[in-house]
Length: 87
Image (tube, rainbow, N blue to C red; front, side):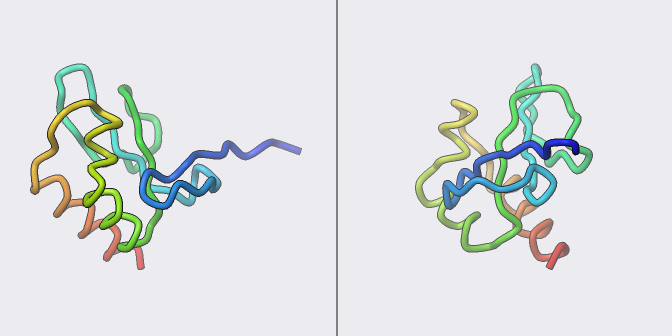
C-alpha cells in the first residue's frame, strides 16, 4: 500500500493529505503562484480548501512568514477565488 504524504496547513495548523490542500509556491525569481499540479519548483506552503483557514493565515501573516517576503493583495484575491471555485 502506497503511503499518502501529509502536509500542514498554514492557516489552521492541522495535518492533512497533500492532495486535499492547495499549494502556494515562491520560485527562484520571487514570483508567488498557486500550484495546481503540486509539482512546481520552489518553496511551497499549503493551505486548506477553506476560506476560514485562508483568513487566519492572512491575519497572522503566516504565508508571508513562510516565504520571508511581503505578499500582494492580488495573490490573496487569487487564493480566495481558487477556494471559492473548489467549493
